[in-house]
Length: 82
Image (cartoon, rainbow, N blue to C red; front, side, top):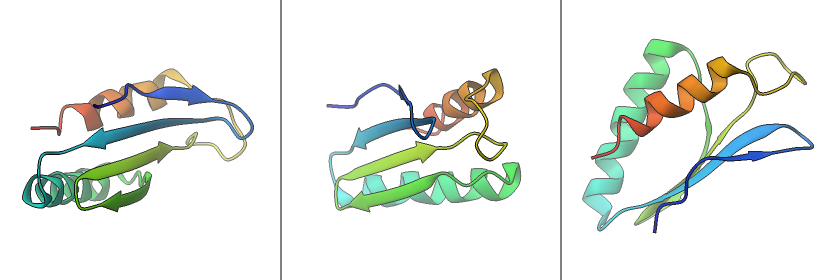
């Protein structure tokens, strides 16, 4: 089951795990995420397996707080989901 974005502290970040039905769906999402990241010049930390992706969004300003812009980026990533 997909988890919503979670706001974590120390260091401050947003995290989310997304599960997919199969590898092809996972790969298609990662390709869309890559295109989005190149366009936005924001690169979340990613770990993934055959049917899941773990994402971490760190603040745009190093050691800064999570801001509204970071939440907007999380929402934009959600829009990439099938």
